[in-house]
Image 1 (cartoon, rainbow, N blue to C red):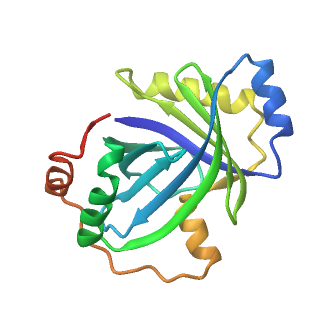
Image 2: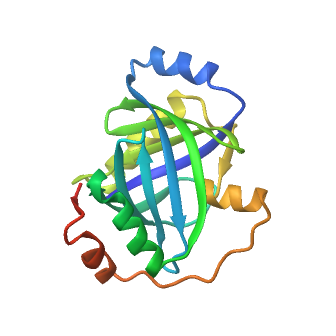
Image 3: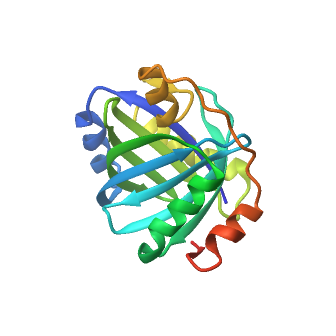
Amino acid sequence: MKNIELKISVKDFNEINFLLKKIKAKHASEMYQRDIYYCCKNKRLKIRNINDKEYMLISYKRLDKASSKISDYEIFDINPEEINSVRSLMEKKFKQQIVVEKNRDLWLWGTTRIHLDTVSMLGNFIEIETIMGNRDLKSAKEEFNNIFDLLGLKNHKKIKGSYSDLLLEKLKTKPEKTVKFDQSVLVELFTRASKPA
């Protein structure tokens, strides 16, 4: 799966909440997320906990640049009863890198997800993700650019990497030795514990 995404740093969400209501974006949900990132050479890899009820493995690959970029990702749901087994298997393959905790307020506009994130130790961010689906890149970019303009984000600070990168930098943590991700790892991990989302 692919989307076009961008992360932006903001002081607060007052203006963005006003604009989201003005353009009639749909408020979908509020949630707590805890992401465990693992050291992986050729893509990013994390286990996500949502409200201590839902769990998933997310792998994705994208360029690190302070502008919109395409993210190529896979999501696998994890049976909550198997989360400890999956984590144990993961940690045999990959070293845990860092844990990122955040509260997320999710809004929807067309096929675009707007995340208002308050990230522990880092502050407030807006993340825009326009899902490409079966349409071409030009159509997806048009939607992305429309919501970007409607929310008046041009003059806000764009973020190059992920929350994990920002937190590692803040904590002055040196990157760990990484292991190359191989698709066969998923087969071993999810033979009984999960299914594609």
